Image (cartoon, rainbow, N blue to C red; front, side):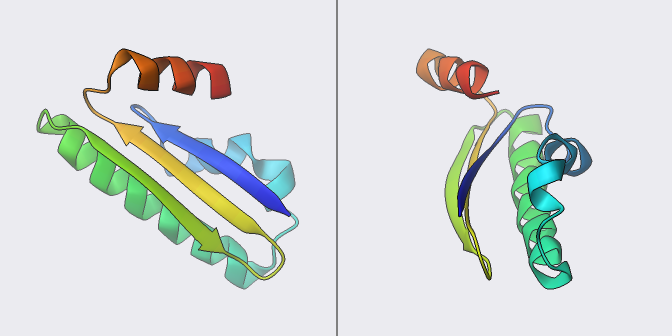
Length: 90
């Protein structure tokens, strides 16, 4: 099972995981904790850099027991193409 989760300006860990709650509820406890930690890491670093006026892009693949999750993060001053992709995928 493969899943892509998009993160951007204004994203919070709880909001991101709530948006994918039905899918995430199928994960075992260890995988859910690992996913939460990776999302927290990206949101924290993205917000810090964004608050300082920088941009932050990251694409991270998280291998879970029965799933592969791609975390696509774009924070800060992103170009028009990035903003359009985030709007279309949200």
